[in-house]
Length: 191
Image (cartoon, rainbow, N blue to C red):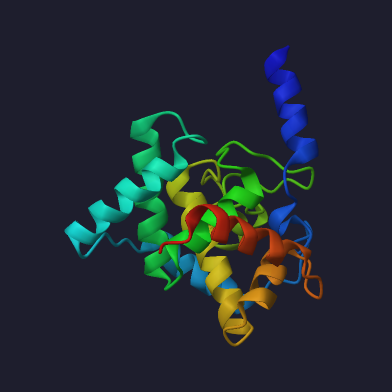
């Protein structure tokens, strides 16, 4: 009973994320489709172990209140760092997006069907030829979410506010970007 209530609350309260921007039968952006195909097959890791360890310790301390399990917290942070840097995004920005989109609930499900930490719409899995991939899987969700955000940042010529609004499906509104900036400045900004 409590689990059913929790799922209903998640559906009602979670951010629509990409849902607004991505209807079930969207006019698919072929460039983004190709980027997702390439991203799903690519893999990288930290290049500087010392810097990564310092970052992981700092961010783990900040994330502890939201993600209690230390093993999962470290896996999440390593994956965020890897996927963000793979596409030249700030890992702290990605953490802020995740906070706003799902509040670090990897099983978040929006009313429009967006899934996981970064609230990715499942139609993308069919579009890239991986219909059985799981958007609740940490690696899959972060790889796709970061790739999509990077694509929108490039499409908006580096204008992060517009890219964030496009990611959320609210281009022309500053509400969502302000939420992400606030989360980034308050919780994830590195001094």
